[in-house]
Image 1 (cartoon, one colour):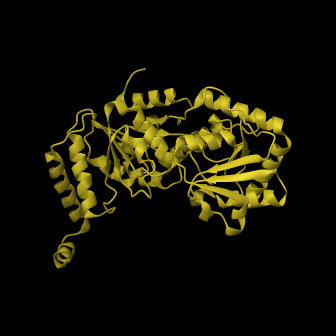
Image 2 (cartoon, helix red, strand yellow):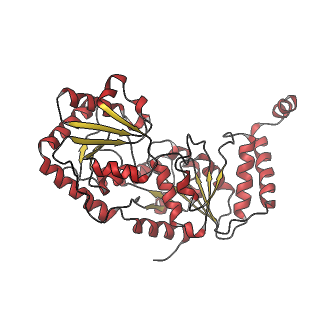
Image 3 (cartoon, rainbow, N blue to C red):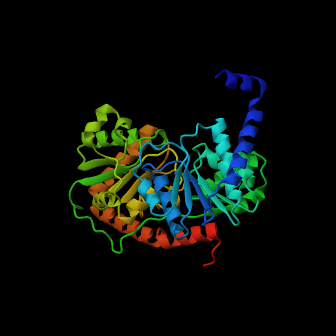
Length: 395
């Protein structure tokens, strides 16, 4: 311990970090293994989550190459690890404290190791480690990131490394507008926007419209997601409680680790299913539900909306991010202006009451949602786009 203090006293942090990086690079050049695929993915988690599901789908598109996947942050559970295991070789480096000397030694080691691969490709999303890696890679190593949504702070973390990227994947026109404004504000060359590509996420869509068995009974309203602050799930609880006070025939079913995000006085108006990792079990809930609720303050284009529409479940959502790019208000879903929380709850209740009164409209919107998903969210387009991006395949 005294030796560590002595070293830190006489050597500034930048010098120590540089030494750790160089030591790591020396080790990386000596590693005996090679990654035959040349594909390296860096993701934060393998826990349950929409982003994690998308990451696993991207990896699955190149499963024939058996890529390597590194997880950089500590996952709260392992429930989605199996989604990656069938497609890739996995490495968990989440025990490295961010910004520690061991962390930078690992950055150096992996950079040197990746640089030993000709035609290497490095793809990352939602983690700092990926961006710290970029400046140490050879220029001919292809570097790509995915921005799920603008506003989660990763767009600021990534800013110093934008020129290091060969491509950026985004999900919405709003994200492109936000990037344009950010690049202009920060004095980045507008030509960097030419590297931005749209690739919509994908979901499996049933071959036939999954008719709702209980269309004339109580409305089934579904929420699927975390209890994170930006999801504002407390508004779902308030909506459920108000619907019950008004005597609306509506059941609120919540999936995910979100019970504590609902105010205690509103929980009795909700049914909590907890986290569901089994896709068939979740799809069964989509097939039974009439409406999907989303009350987020920010989004890209959430996978949960795509999954719901694939089963004819009508999205009822705040109008944020790229949602309006796919959800047409009054046709295949309903959008609520993202304003004051009280107005959002009122808008949600009004929309639910409208659908309760007009089941014909609900049926029409349900069929439009399914048909839209069938046309736009098919897996074939998704994998073809990512294989072009990662492998530079021509289709």
